[in-house]
Image 1: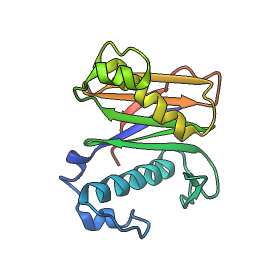
Image 2 (image 1 turned 180 degrees about the vertical axis):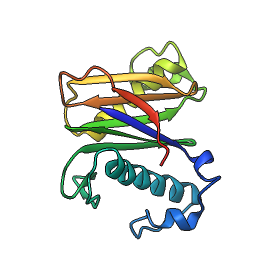
Image 3 (image 1 turned 135 degrees about the horizontal axis):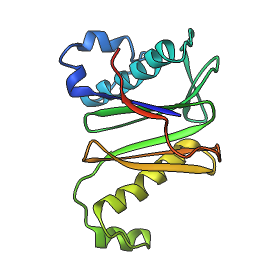
Length: 174
């Protein structure tokens, strides 16, 4: 499994909204932020699939509320938070979540989720695992969580019991 990410702030210094419009799949968006997140997610998925995994047809379809390549080839999961858009790629099903770690009322969250959170990092590890498992759409056999870029928590889950951690977490430059 590999994870690639884009810093939208950096990307938008060299690309404009006309470039991104090619990656919106005809969708309309209520905000510029959602437009950028969606388009960059699709750009990341399609470009990485072509350049890294040599997948020629990157047409995406939605099955059970989950994006997939229409003609197979590799599985992926997309997540975005703050200025980061990330995508995990694997041979088997995977789920990815990334969240910017902001101060939270840990006492209130501990009561709400009926478990003790001892730090903000502890809560976001729980939360990203939860979100990644939803994206996997099955019971995870393995999971990996890490602080990413100092202020973000990243979690990926896999249906593959032999998975231990991503072979790379790399900035995507194409």
